[in-house]
Image (cartoon, rainbow, N blue to C red; front, side, top):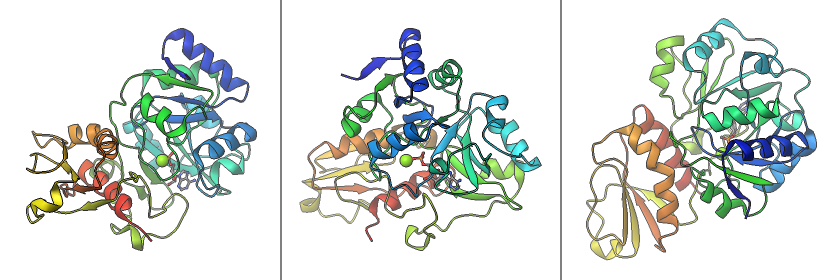
Length: 319
Ligand code: AMP
Ligand code: MG
């Protein structure tokens, strides 16, 4: 069994593996990541292999501090600097011009690299002890639900990673928000930091289209993503006849609907932050509940609610 508790000793073991070109799954505040030395092409290639990820989808590089950031990116303009100042360490990924040392495999051949400074103490300890930036996408099979626990990683990837560090459930539970900072900053993916909070710092962001079918097929914006194995649809529970409920699961926002075979409530208090923390966890549980379909109730389209709706739409999308 490759899962070990994230003790100081095991973090050292993981750091040693990373220095030798290994691939290690570790907790971050957003979701669990599958990490390798960002400068080691062979190690990065193993990430794609383990995830079954198409090589045109770029990875996020995790850095410990400003010095490590400078090893990865070429320059940081005033708007990126303002976002870094306000939101790092934390669940915000910035897309910035890359240094030539960053392999093309990491960025899918793009001249830019997605970088983030995580806040999770285990992720930070691993970055510090390995001494290198870590390229780390979410530690799940490509296109599937993101993992918020070590057990989700093991269920999805088996013994693919050399080690899985168990640091408990990811406290935020949703992926980072991704912003490209060119002349005008653009929101590439909604996530754990609400777009409104970013706009309070840098002004209006260009927004992605809400319907995934209309999203351009730029790297990492594949319409089908974050999907459970069970078919899922988004709808109000009320009109669903009881015959259709008996074999289905329900993902509810505040109140449990009657008659479903399995129900998960995201936040009885209607708190979007609490809901985000339970979101992937609840989908994983419903996916394992043996139901034939999952009905998901629409969430309020603001802040983290908009980020969860983006994921639900992608989960329901079939081309
Ligand atoms: P994940 O690490 O699984 O949350 O996914 C990483 C995502 O980051 C990709 O799917 C892209 O959407 C985004 N990303 C990373 N680097 C870039 C980049 N250079 N340009 C645009 N998007 C990026
Ligand atoms: Mg992912």
